[in-house]
Image (cartoon, rainbow, N blue to C red):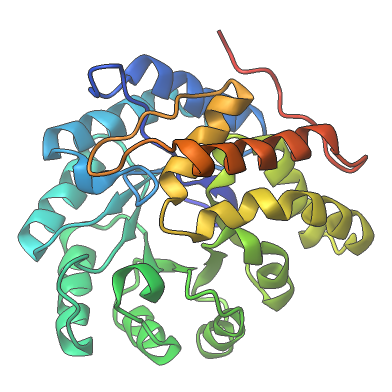
Length: 306
């Protein structure tokens, strides 16, 4: 398991009856890998995991594992309201062939550090799979401070990475200063990726990559290589799209971008509803401007497989 590079937090495609579209999911995973993504993360927030039954989650992992390119890992996000369910999902994910886990805090109860550490520890103890801790205080109300991340990393050898989504790139520096080479730090919000790489991040759990994989991989590689002029040009073009990853309707927006690009459907499961009216018009306008003003530094993603 190599914790580096661009790993899409993949969307979950639905049929018209809102069952999971496994045929499309497999093609989507293959397309992302073909465009240079280092692996995929399924069952995350962007994957609408809270609307999926346990059996649906296992089936999605199974499909992703079968479709992913050789050498590219499938990372299963582990989100549950209580530890026993999280442990069961982590163990099932390993059985289905997932090569890593992304551990979320309980997404309703916002406990203190003692409680949140116990929840994460139960998952880390349940399987030898390497794991990434997902820190997103904006969405979940639980903030894993750098000192707490370091504490977990010292106690659990299979904690290998952290997805830092606090929107404060200083956290990347702080985590690196405490953990050194023991943890790989990933940026988890799309519109902070270049700043995060400059601060020491080695990976990106990305959202708009679902519609723009080649462009996302190129941005990451340019920024990592220190090719600042080219990275800045591509980043400036990409930012109006990347900012869609940071608002409450990020799932609807990113799926809408997939539909606009011809690489997916805007269907979402309730309580989410697809965009309409002014929101839809604004999203389409952003896509149209991006499509009409692609910079020289942006390579177009390969065609989606039929």
